[in-house]
Each structure stands twice: as C-alpha cells, then as structure tokens.
Amino acid sequence: MKPLSLLIGILIILGVTIKTIKAEKHNKRQKERNVTTQVSANKIKQYLSHILEQRTSSNVTNKREKLLEKKKNQHKIRIKEIQNRAILKRNKNHLQKQAEKNFTDEGDQLFKMGIKILQQSKSQKQKEEAYLLFAKAADMGNLKAMEKMADALLFGNFGLQNITAAIQLYESLAKEGSCKAQNALGFLSSYGIGMEYDQAKALIYYTFGSAGGSMMSQMILGYRYLSGINVLQNCEVALSHYKKVADYIADTLEKSEGVPVEKVRLTERPENLSSNSEILDWDIYQYYKFLAERGDVQIQVSLGQLHLIGRKGLNQDYYKALYYFLKAAKAGSANAMAFIGKMYLEGNAAAPQNNATAFKYFSMAASKGNAIGLHGLGLLYFYGKGVPVNYAEALKYFQKAAEKGWPNAQFQLGFMYYSGSGIWKDYKLAFKYFYLASQSGQPLAIYYLAEMYATGTGVVRSCRTAVEKRLTFLKKRRCIRWHFSYGIELPFKDIHLARRLYDMAAQTSSDAHIPVFFALMKLETMHLLQDILFFNFTMRWKWLKMDNTIGPQWDLFVIGLIVAGLIFLLRNHHG
Image (cartoon, rainbow, N blue to C red; front, side, top):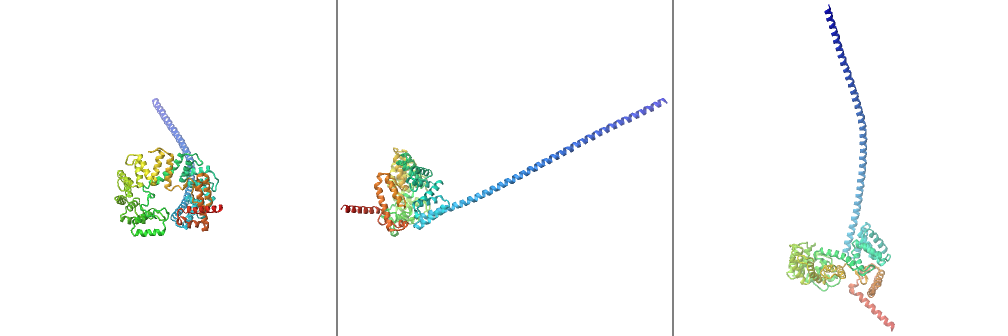
C-alpha cells in the first residue's frame, strides 16, 4: 500500500505543481496583457493629446493665415486704389498736357499764318490782319508772337505805340528766356527810353541776350568793346563777338554749297532794270514784258533773274523765271543757259532738282565761254553732283571762270587752296583769290579773309583788320543797320524820340555834329511835309513816297532849298 500511496502522493504533488505553474503562467500573461493595455492606453492618450495640440496649433495658424490674408487683401486693395488714383492723375495730366499742346499748336499756327500774311502783304490792311493774328497767338502764350507785339508797341506799328506796355511785355519775355527781349531792354536802358538810363544794366541785358543767341546783342557788344563804350576797349573781345555772328551767317551760306541766291547778279544790264531803284514801276514792267515777248534776249534774261530772286517789287516766281530763261536760251543766251543749270542744280517747283539737266545746261553755257556755266561745272565736280568728285576738273573750271572775273569762282579757288581740297594748301594763293573775290563783294571771301587775319594764317595777324573784315561781311549780309559813327537809324515813328536819339549821337562824338545837323534837317522837313500834306499818321507814310517822285536824294534837294532860303533871309536882314 505504501508504494501506491507514495505514487498517488507524487501524482497529486505533480498535479498541484502543474496547476501552480499554469496559474503562474496565466497570471504572468494576464499581467503582460494589463501592461500592454496600459501602454496602449497611454499611447492613445498621448496621440489624442498630440492631435488636440495639432488641431489647436492648426486653428491658431489658420487664424493667423486668415488674418495675414486679410491684411494682404487690404494692402492689395489700397495699392489698387493708389494705382487707380495715379492712373486718373496721369490721365488728367495727359489730357491737360494735350489741351495745352493743342492750345500751343493753335498759337503756333496763328503765328505762322501771321508771318505768311506779313511776308506777302502789299497793303496796310493785310499787315493789320497779320498783327491781329499775332495778338491772338500772343494771348495763347506764343513767345514769338509776344515778341512781335512788343516790337509793334515799341515802334508804333499801326498807331499802337505804347513804350511802357512794350517794356512790361519785354520784361515778361525776358523772364521766359527771350534773347530778343533781353536785347530790346538793353537798348532801351542804354538810351533811357521808357526806363531809367543805366549803361551797367544795359550791358547785363546785352550779355544775357548774347548768351541766349541774339545776333544783335553779339554785334552791339562787339561794337562796344571795339570802341570802348562803357567797357574797357578790347579788340580781342570785340573780335570774339563779331566772329560768332559771322560764323552763323557763313554756315548758313555754306549750306547752299557755293550758290547762295544773294550772289545772283543782273548779268544783262538794261538801264532801268539794273538801277538802284527798289521798285520797278508797273508800267515799265509791262513795257519790258512786251519787249521780252518780242524777242529782246537781254530783257528776257533780266526778267528771269528778277523773278528768280524776287527783286524790284516782283514776287519770286520760279515758273516765270524759267519761262524767260528758256526763251533766252533758245535764242542762244549763255547766261540764260547757266541760270537754267543753276535752277536745276538747286531744285524748285518749276525745275525739280536734276543734276543731269544741270550738267547739260552748264555745259552748254561753258562751251560758249560763259563764266557762270564754267563755275557751275566746277561746283558739280567739286561736290560730286551727278558726276564723281573730281577736284582736278573742279580746279580747272574754277580757274577758267575766275580768269573771266566771276567772283564766286575766285572764292572757290581760294577755298580749295585754303582747305587743301584736292591740292596742297597754299595760304598765299588762298589770300590772293579771297581778296580778288572780296573786291566784288563776295561775302564768304570776306569772311575767310577775316579768319586769316584773326588767326594769322598766311598773313600777319591783325585783330583790327579782322574786325573790319567781319563788319564788312556782316554789312554785305545786311545784318547791320547801325551807323557806328553817328548813332543808330531806327524805324521809329516817334519823331520826338528820333530827335532825342540824334541829339545823343551828337553828344557822343564831336565829329557827329554836322551829319546830325543834316539828319535833323531831313527829319524836321519830313515832319513838316507830313503835317502839311496829310492828317492821318499811318496813312501819311503809305502815300508819302518822296524817293519815287523827286528821287533818292530828295532830302538833299529840300535841304538845299532851305539853306538857300536862310542865306536869302540873312542877306536881307543885314541889308
């Protein structure tokens, strides 16, 4: 029994042990499950907490982003508003500028119309119409029109004289930079006309006028420095001022490539056509037309020239000029052929620019030994007009024309030697030909002679001679209306003012007393005749043309009568 009991006891112990082990394993697994469950719960809690934080952060971020977006939108709206305001302002400024431009353009058009009418005017009524347009343009702020009106007020055009108003307008224009106004104020200050006599102020005005480009101010300053009037006498400064004016004019002449209109002379010389009379009487003109149609070649050429350049009261008419030249050329006139060549070289409405045609007619004239034709061929070769540039050929033709005494050809020869155009420079020969041309009044030749004296090129430098040449050149170009010895000749219609100027001229120089005496005699005689013959001032000047009735020296004739009368009275008085 004992072994069996022992075995049963062992089995019981094993069973209990096994159950215990199983229970321990079960408990262990249960603990592990509890730990895992707890960990999972903690993780879930952490995860949920993290999600909540993210949501909270996201909400905050979203709010910030929305706020920023709102601010951005507001900023964009403000920028847009600013841009819109700027666009509106730009549009407004553009419209304003456009309106101002239209206003200015209208003023410019009125001024140009006035100038055109004034240039073509043949009656007082047309001139008044022109100045009416200037007045309207001036109201629109056109400076050139304002200058015209200021001049009209100063000089009394059409009975408008008001020196005070003229000065006010000049002062307004001077502030706008008008060099013409500066020059006018300088003149008025220097003579104490309408404003205080002040030479220092006059010098300032002239200096500003000169700096602004006023040729007249340049010439006035040149004369003042040359003569030492209210400045230290200085020939070099005078030369500098005159040079600026001369350079400007010479440049204008040279742009016409050696054939400026002013150089055209009356090559045929019927007595009345080549006289110094400014206006050709209508009946005489009709008579010459009749002779021209009858085949008078000299008259044909002369009428052609008059119409070509518009002289002696005849309008410039290229068609009539060409008509008369062709008639004369057909009859064999070399001068007419040369002028036809000139017309085609320069080009105009009647003869469009054509180098081949110019060459043809110049050649026809040159073949007859005509100086103008030879000179024309020289120009074609010199400038390469329709033919290759050939200085040797140009030199040949210029020499032939110069030998015949044609001053333009003499000038061209001088220029070739002066500039070394196709030949070696030779200042002595340049001086020789410039001098020859200057004796016939060729303006560019005088200009280059002045240059040579001013720079000492080919001659001994002489400032005084250079200045004299410059003055001669300017007078040839009709730029000077100044009588340097005896004062100033002005188109004033104020007799009292004219008297004052003559008196001042007499006080300036003792040599001026006699010329001023005769000038005053002429002035007083003119004034007396006007008062006797006419009542309306403006109409008197229109009809009183003593030059055409008695002659250009009528004033000397009248003064002679007055002097004779005075002698007669004195003799009777002593008797």
